[in-house]
Image 1 (cartoon, rainbow, N blue to C red):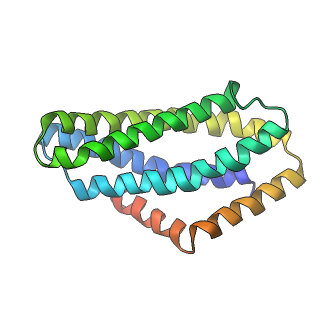
Image 2: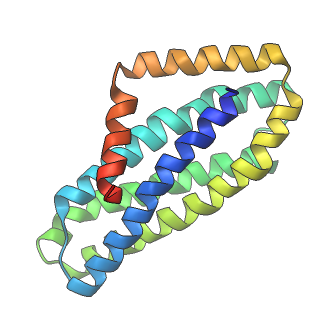
Length: 180
């Protein structure tokens, strides 16, 4: 399995939680109530699995290797993906910053949580589409078999550094949030 195939598989798990985030935002809007525990799980998933695990593999490994093969890092497809990673972190931070006040009945905080969950999910859908259908195929064309093998080994190292069972834990959380 190529490193980009691993990332594509991770995208499927991230999209499950994006679906759950959209449903939860709609539920909050219609009910005016917040399930703070569920939102906390989403924030943890997005920060740990989507960002610390997945985005770190892209930013610290895949995009670096792409830059080594001539892809500009500050603009073009890689630059756009990096910019969107920053945007997604801001959305998750806004959710985390507002969830307690929203759960306590603050209507502005509830609106901020909803808006940022929806913005995150929308951004990630578009982002994932671009990576899966444009960026990753470009990388695969540029990478040699040695590049692919080196990236696979580096991805494995990242997973080991994060810790045994962490990846699986977040898969379980994703399935729980998705209602599966």
